[in-house]
Length: 327
Ligand code: HEM
Ligand SMILES: *[C@@H]1O[C@H](CO)[C@@H](O)[C@H](O)[C@H]1NC(C)=O
Ligand SMILES: *[C@@H]1O[C@H](CO)[C@@H](O)[C@H](O)[C@H]1NC(C)=O
Ligand SMILES: *[C@@H]1O[C@H](CO)[C@@H](O)[C@H](O)[C@H]1NC(C)=O
Ligand SMILES: *[C@@H]1O[C@H](CO)[C@@H](O)[C@H](O)[C@H]1NC(C)=O
Image 1: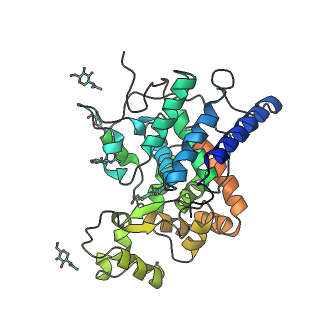
Image 2: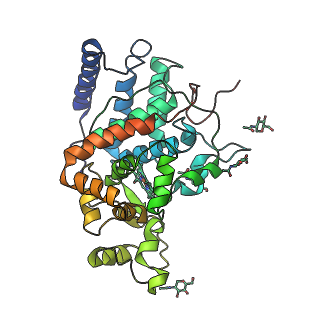
Image 3: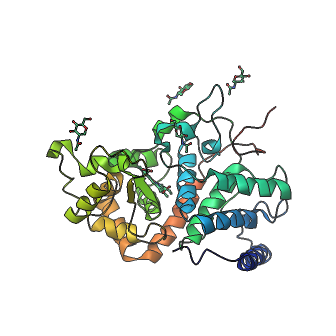
């Protein structure tokens, strides 16, 4: 499975050279480049790409981890790197809040930050690193690539209790709509960004409400395809004690593609919040569009990621993504 990424050192070097050349070409030829690090740290983007590519060569699941981490960052206090801060003696940070189940791959951001502090100390913020890493994770999984608008700084506060502002897996259409509209994002953004669930994994706890429904005497949610529900019930037995048990969010969970939407239409959407996209005519139409056209999905996803990444951040450049600067 990991073959295309299990690049030899030689191939990795070639790819690095190519991405630097691409970055140079973009800078010289094109005023559309939003790269504020042009002068201050021209190698910034390539360094992040290398960190993500190296991590993915060992473990493809870091792609999903980085993408979800960026979402959690942006939806709490804006895209300010708050999700990256560790808890301190007196403050329990976002990453130790209840919805953190399966947040992972923080070490990739640490690796990128270390490389960048060696190249150009104090220039590239952890929030920007995360936005770039999420973009690279998508592109390296077969998804679209887009130009990230960099220049956002980090904040100094991360509070576990504020993660309750993140929509949960049992959210209804109205709750999802409210969570997105409250951040200036549309229902179109909601459908496009939910397509991130083309990557990654959910633990049983995230969809137990669909496979053993008290209101149906413990039977599965009838909106699930019966064979899919049966498979999920096998993966997640009642009183499951295997912490790692769960399911891919779509059938091709290492590939960024439009399978998520096609599964949703077939009664194979995993979370209630995924299913909820079918409960309203407008979002159902976007699901149909993206299920029919991967190209339309990719375009919409890149656009919505830029809109999400623009949620206001902070104004500091941390030396270490896990801690605010002292002073
Ligand atoms: C629309 C509201 C959303 C809800 C309610 C939601 C909820 C969830 C839940 C419950 C999981 C599984 C966690 C687990 O059991 O380990 C998950 C996984 C994931 N989510 Fe979302 N999510 C939403 C939107 C998004 C967005 C906007 C993105 C990114 C743009 C995103 C990216 C991901 C990814 C990549 C995973 C897989 C993580 C992994 O495998 O490590 N989600 N989400
Ligand atoms: C945490 O506690 C220490 C010592 O009491 C204090 O100096 C520091 O300002 C506190 N930090 C925060 C973020 O409240
Ligand atoms: C999630 O939070 C729990 C405590 O609520 C903590 O023990 C765990 O380490 C956190 N997970 C991550 C990935 O930070
Ligand atoms: C979170 O906790 C902080 C301090 O502990 C408090 O000031 C704030 O109001 C709380 N926020 C929410 C959303 O509960
Ligand atoms: C699961 O645990 C509950 C109580 O903790 C018990 O009532 C129930 O019978 C158990 N179910 C199975 C299938 O073991």
